[in-house]
Length: 98
Picture 1 (cartoon, rainbow, N blue to C red):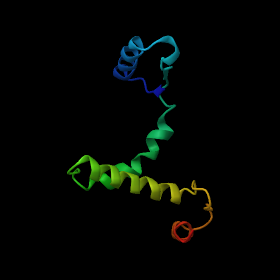
Picture 2 (picture 1 turned 180 degrees about the vertical axis):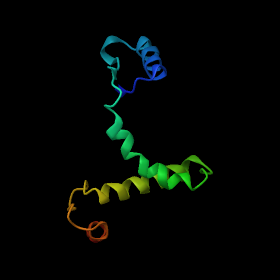
Picture 3 (picture 1 turned 90 degrees about the vertical axis):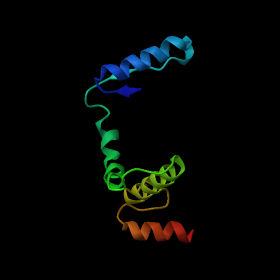
């Protein structure tokens, strides 16, 4: 697992690893910038959710975040059967037609 230089993350994983046997221990990699690409991917979700003032329940949050993630996958052309050079609408229409 890649974590930033936060001591609390490493302490939590170390505590978890003490309870696990040798075969199931989680390898920990601490690097200040290695997980930035993953964190940057979440900013679009944060941007949309920030104006919503929170969710009423977990089910509503899960459905909303899944929808946002699916749109981002289509936008980035990461879905099988889509082309990055097509517009998001063209890729979405192609998926819906299939």
